[in-house]
Amino acid sequence: MPGYYEYLISSLPMLHFEARQVISSDNFLTRCLGFIPKKDIEALCSIFSLEPALTENQTLKKWLYFNTSLKNELVKLRAIRKKIDPLKYLRPDTYSDSSIYHTALAAQRNPSPLEGERLLDRQRWQFLDELAIGHYFDLTILIIYALKLLILERWERINTADKKILLEKIMEPVTSAL
Image (cartoon, rainbow, N blue to C red; front, top):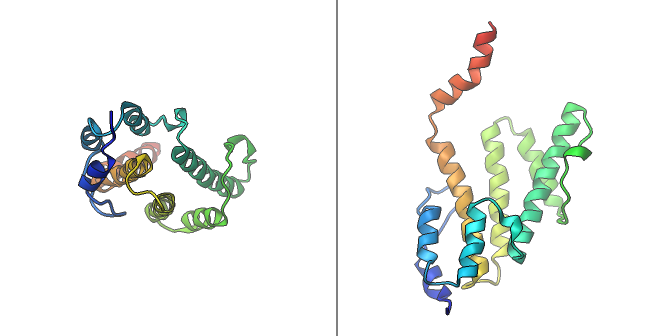
C-alpha cells in the first residue's frame, strides 16, 4: 500500500500547547486508516495503548529516553527532599541534557503543582518540536503528532475535571480523622 503521508498530514489540524484539543486520538487514528501502511498504523496505536516501548521506531525510542530522563530527575529531587536513596526508583536511560535537570528543579520548586506539571509538559512539547526538525511528511511527524495529542488529552482531562469533587476526595481522609 502506498503511503499518502502528504495528504494525511496536511489535512490534520495544527496542535498548540495549552490550546484546546481539536482532534481526538480516535479521530486521528481513523483519519490515518487507508492512507498509511498497516505497520505504521500499529506503531501509532501502540502510542495510545501506552505500549510504545514495544516498537523499534527511533523517534519513539528517543521520546522514551527523554521522558524517562525527565522522570528520573524528578525522582532524584523528591528523594533528596524525603532523605531516601533514589537508586531503587530510577529507570535506566540513555538521554542526557542539562536542561532536564533545570526543568525538573523548576517544576518541583513551583508553589503550584499544576503549574509545575505545565512546565514539565511544556518541556516535553519543546522536545517533540526538536524531534520534528527535518521531518515533514513521514511517520516521524505522525508519531510526534500522536504524542502531542496525548499531552493535550491529559490537559483536557485536567481542565474539565470537577474541582469540587476532587477537593472532597482529597479532604475525605483528613475530615474522617477528625
